[in-house]
Length: 305
Image 1 (cartoon, one colour):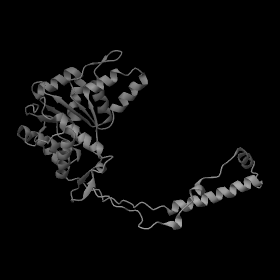
Image 2 (cartoon, one colour):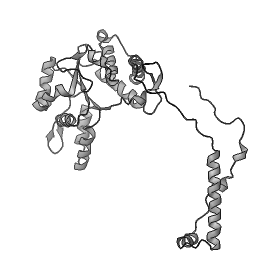
Image 3 (tube, one colour):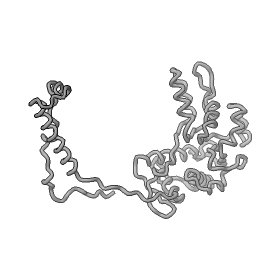
Image 4 (tube, one colour):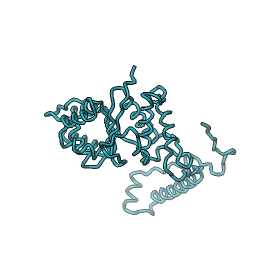
């Protein structure tokens, strides 16, 4: 990346300021007492006020002489180009996962998932046409995602890459093209989401002893778009009693309308997997699954070697 030297070609001595003149005069207790009673005509107070006025003038001159930073004018924000977002994802995958993204894995199912997520995060209607969507739940961009697949099909690494790239784009200038081909800062699109593993969340809850901290825990996790990895593998939490964390969490997030993204492994067929959710979290959660989630199915084999 080229760095342009914007320093002046010639020293600007006309505004050079003596460092000592930029230090405010000492305000002693005597001066404090004189000013408190408004005795500004006393020779000590008078001298102090004259020196302070001189200091303020010097400071104003110094600040006005400083070089002004060039204002950065960002282009008008237009919808993101999905192909460009997908290219950024592939580069990010190589960086964060330390390997190339295999677009051909499981008959290109991994590629389909990544592209489906690109359309979902950018809120493009093309998401509704994804071949990975199961229409047992009516597809909608207003719903969250339930990604179901076998072990090792790439669910975690793909979602982790999206999380990392959206997160880092908030502090680093990652570029993506919009629909008109203009370079935009990815962070401007605000596509980020929280990322937690189900088991880590249970461990965090079990370590809480203060009731107020428990309230903070529930408040934190019941709001905002969040992804929970490996749901259904978590143990029942034990913290002054047994509790299924995600039973309560799903109900809270349903009531707040927060988008929830989860991934889980098959427990047999899709219907059998949904039945297992009902057994673990209850009928109330099961009934809300279809309102809360788009269901994405991955039918490929494990990519782990």
